[in-house]
Image 1 (spheres, rainbow, N blue to C red):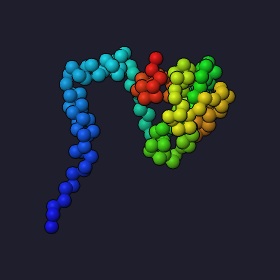
Image 2: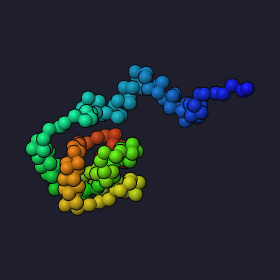
Image 3: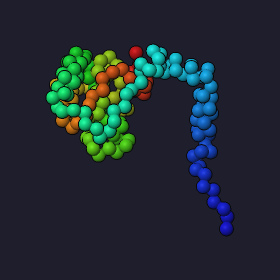
Length: 159
């Protein structure tokens, strides 16, 4: 009987070897310093997201009214508004929330997006965006407002 190899095939592909190579050289101080300067120009501590613990109460609805007003302010101020299905929920097959309650992009960066590349992406009016934000609040979702450099790079809307 021939002995079977239990090593995954993917580890021996060219792509995996390239990834391993860059993972190794990425640990070198000079390379990691260069990467940090490119990826986080203002420093990694000022541009990283903050995780929100899952299944922990975030307060009552009264506490969220201020947040909705802040969201409403920025939506009313924005020139271009793009709504898209949530790529995180699509990839993880989330059943807790609707996939249609996804990302909201505002401003000049949203106008530069190639809408054909992203599921459910479309330019909407301010009223539609406000309605969707209201639905997101009712579903227990909390908006994230900010300028995320990695998301901007992924969606090719860098300033």
